[in-house]
Length: 234
Image (spheres, rainbow, N blue to C red):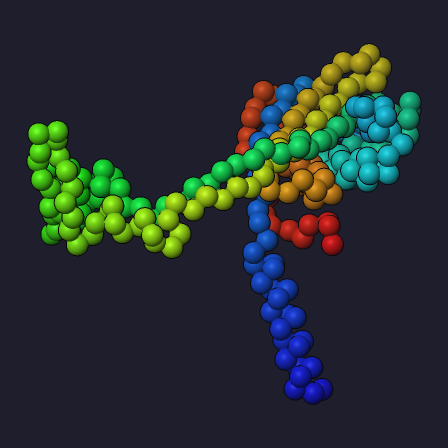
C-alpha cells in the first residue's frame, strides 16, 4: 500500500470517527394516557389515522417500526380485522419558525460584573478599576477609562452579530383501541424541535421516544433523550 493510500484511508477513518463523536442526541416530550392490560400476546394491526396515508410506502415503513416495538413488549402482529387491538398512527412536521440569535461584544456598563467597577456612579462588587464618571446637571456622564464601552465594540469585529435559523416542530400520535368495542386503551403524543425537517430521521426517533418505558404511567408527561445514533438519511 502506497503512502498516499495510507494517508487517504487514515483521513477517511478519522472523518467517520469525527462524525460519530458529533452525532447529536435526540430529545422529545412524550405525553401518555393508558389503561392497557398487561401484554399477554394480544394481536394487533396498525392503521393510518389519516386514511389517505394507508397505501403510502412511507407510512408502511414507519408502521413496521411501531410493529417491531409492540412485538418487543409482548404483542403479536396480525392482519386486518383478525386482530385484538387496532393501533392508529399519525406523524407530521410543521413548516418551521424563524429564530433570531443576537451576539454582542458590547461591554454594557450596567451589566453586573463582580470583577469590575462599572456603571454610572457607584460600582458593583469587587475590582481594581473604576472608570471616570462626571456628574452634570442632567445626570451622570461617562468620560472614559481603560475599558471604554462606548468606544470599544462599536467598530469591533463581531459586534452585535445577528444570525437567523429555522426551528421545526415534529409530532407523532399513537392510539390503541380494543377492536371488539372500540374502547380507547392508549393515547400517546411525542413532539420534538429540531433544525431538521427530514421525517425519515425524525419519525424513527419519535417512535423510539414513544416506546421508551412503554406504556408508561397514566397521564404522564416525560422528557425522553435518546443516545446518538446513525440517522437513516444516508
